[in-house]
Image (cartoon, rainbow, N blue to C red; front, side, top):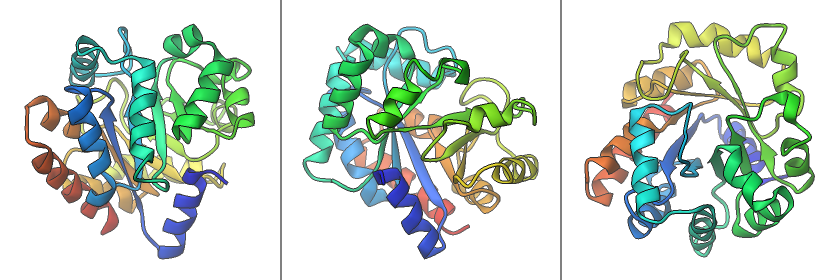
Amino acid sequence: MTRIDAKFAALKEQGKKAFVAYVMAGDPDYDTSLEVVKGLPGAGVDVIELGLPFTDPMADGPTIQAAGQRALDGGMTLQRTLDLARAFRETDDTTPIVLMGYYNPIYSRGVENFLTDAKAAGIDGLIVVDLPPEEDEELCLPAQAAGLNFIRLATPTTDDNRLPRVLQNTSGFVYYVSITGITGVAEAQATDVGPEVARIKAATDLPVIVGFGINTPEKSRNIASVSDGAVVGSAIVSQIGAGKPVPEVLDFVKSLADGAHSA
């Protein structure tokens, strides 16, 4: 059982929904980023999604793209991202970390080397948005063999013919993208999301977590009420990008987490 599996089992036992927070590793710099990540569990975050900076983030909106560029400009690399995760693990051995990014940096490092290093750094799961299920032998299956969850995205365009393929080798949880398009540019609506989550849950026992378009405590609560939890990324990254002090960022995160946990 991974930390992700254990976390969702504990939440289910408590009758609570999950709150997942996304931050870009190294944004705006390594030290500030580590301070934010270390503060997330205390702000109520159940799972940390750690963005891996990349030069061509095709699924990300302007907010996340800008965060990735700030991180890259500050010298952030795959190695330093793993270093950050390792530093976090020195004081927290229970909060799951999901590394979210693109395949190129992983491929460049070598899949076997990457998986060994990611596991040693305390990474629990991967979301690699540009690897479809047809490429499962490339990274998904080796990752699961190494003890890492491989989390797949389902979207409004994932129809009933496609869904079984998407779910086939997914583990940890299913990430439902509530809107069509890139991150941070539209708002999620619980009335639209609810039926889609129900459709996915009819096909899998995995928790279904909803992200994209959630930027207030109220929306966090509304989305969590029709799913197993909510993910917020762009709204948090915007606070960091605006130069807000870390305690202020964490207060905002706590308000979002409280929203999801009250669902």
